[in-house]
Image 1: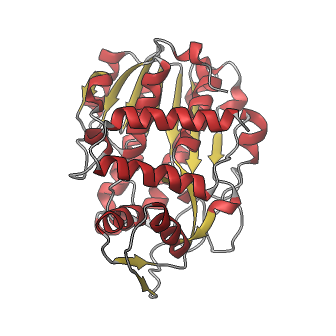
Image 2 (image 1 turned 120 degrees about the horizontal axis):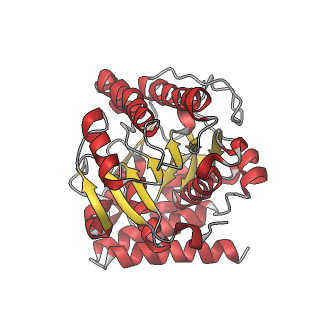
Image 3 (image 1 turned 30 degrees about the horizontal axis):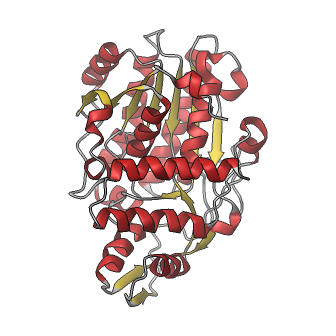
Length: 357
């Protein structure tokens, strides 16, 4: 479980804090009483979680620099002296990796290596959680549930770059951190969704924009299956993991971890769109593109037994819960509600649901 006393006044650095997951994690850290700093580029899209929730005010320091810049990253860490680092800064998209392969590699591989090399130099850092992806596994479309010991790889540059970042993180730990006072772990999650994600090439972005205006929705790869999960579920796992590896006192936790959804949330894109449309009470017409985009894998599933057994973490939200939370956030935002308070309330609702199980 999350230990609120542990997080009180902890110095936390979140790379990628202006992004979707980084923003939600920042809000959660604030609720827990941590002293948060962020290192990231400006938000990539005109609409974004960071500005919708007006969370700039919650950061002690807000650095707008590139993870590829070793010198600026080190300056940030020297100034903020974080005890805990969550590394989420990345080029996060499969399709973007086809347009900009070199930048994807440099950002995801060299950017992560920069961070690890700097962490190695400063003893005030006690734990670092490196967020990778469920796409780090070599996926041959055999419809298996990938466990942490399965082979890593990637046919596209995004997947390959994140697999490299994962391997490098584990190698750094074994080479330099095993006998140190800093734990290092990598975390892999499914297709995270929730309020405030306007990233291009994503069904959630296209769907919410269309459904709010009752416009037609063109669905790419409608029959692909994805491991959908509300991002609060893996974020809960990341927070627990950061606690466990703090100070590297129990070395078994400094390893790789899956935080995937329950299998019943693995549904086709078309079914995802139908449920979300219902939750948003939209009259939009769904247009199916039956041509398969072979650049993205059609099936993906994670085995999270390790996190369940060793961390006490378990996915519990149904797909209806997940899409209800998501739809309510976008509807509230369209009505110009206070989205910081709304986001805090959703985190509290999530925790209440978890505790009521």
